[in-house]
Image (cartoon, rainbow, N blue to C red; front, side, top):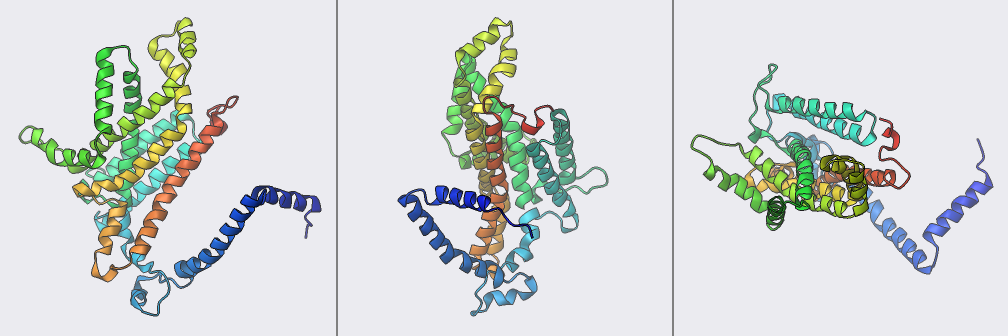
Length: 366
């Protein structure tokens, strides 16, 4: 067995001491955290894993008064509803494939293994394929109305399509709010302030209840599309202010220098100003993305069953009532699995955006 050099051990101990016991306040905090972890972590592991009920066949043990573990049999029994909503059971492979495709597209975008042009093509082809898989009606797939979409699939679709359309719209709104044309600027200000002045629930209610009243007779827009448009409008207003903050952080001399080179307005904006502004705005942009992803749970007010709502509805069944702790822990874990990578990716982008480093990182030559 290879022996670890004593110098490496000393460096490790020295590093731990500098990070955890640098002064008396740091030492007290470290000891306190270790004590709390020692008191809380082993009992949680015992409850969540060692004495947990995992199989629906053993669900009767969940009601056993002597039972001391979590009832994950609830999740095992309801996982199809939680992931796919009321989508036809025999067609569950379709939303399952959609979830896999979306995660794959997210991973390809984050890891940067594909060239940008190829990545754009992959997203366009992927979203088109997802539309065919969910709606059906083509390639021998049976049609499934979107009222039956739900669960994690619906959450991912609402957030993905919402951000895909809201982000470009937010850039246009931010540029319009800084425009020298009064009408364009006033329109952008009115839109942003009006949307930000009302809660998302109000917009969803208006899209679901009031919008159909203004449509011509015989014309109808399905509920999911109305909810998606409301969420796009809502996200665009908030993202526009984030982008505007990045634009205002760019020194005026940057635009003047680009103008001196003979670049037009859109050339200056696209090649000089906007890339720098978006780099500066990475942290608040990702923060807004994460908030928007979690705000999809509000579609329950118009009768759509997202990831969190399917868990709540499952708890309403008498057989599974009283297991809210397990349900909400599972929901928290699910949201964390998607939100934490977004946070980590923003930190990677921030490091790549530091002076002297390209935005591409590993993919800067792509």
